[in-house]
Image (cartoon, rainbow, N blue to C red; front, side, top):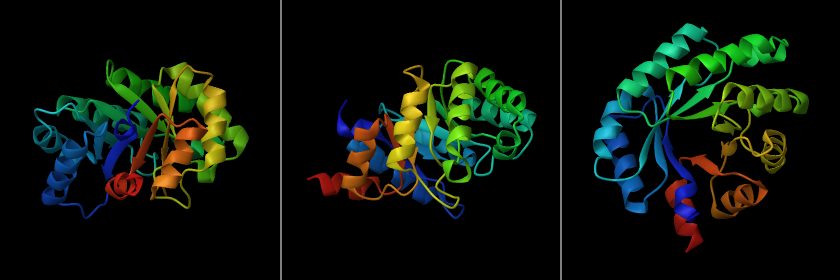
Length: 215
């Protein structure tokens, strides 16, 4: 796969304006990234900005805490798809996972999976809050629910992607889904190391810097 196609070019800042999202999309088209990743309010606008390109529109759901009800996540997903989302990145209910309520976590993921049938679904774990055992369980639940990717982090908590987490997740999805690394990937060497560890997609707002650093 070409290096540029590893990237979800991302702007999830609460202060992001339409002009910021327009710039994000223009940059993504210039470099032909895999997608732009935006908050739901900009789904239709990003889709319009990306018209005529093969850059996908990726939208976050339950972001950044994952702590809203499953019904709300499913509705948010349905609305994003109606507005043009090609890919959905959802945050799991971290507290339920840590409490061992695995059936509830599965049902949360499955409800979003059902709401975006036919679209790419990535499951955000927030690994900085989890033990290795919990990360492994989250991988198992995500695969069972039919996810396309498992993802390390939101980038909005106490830590981001690590090489060890990417390798752990890659090993425990056992080829049944892919791995996205996100959070703290800010230079070419880090991006390359994540790919070497097994990442199939990278989420970062420093994408242009990374591409320029490769030259």
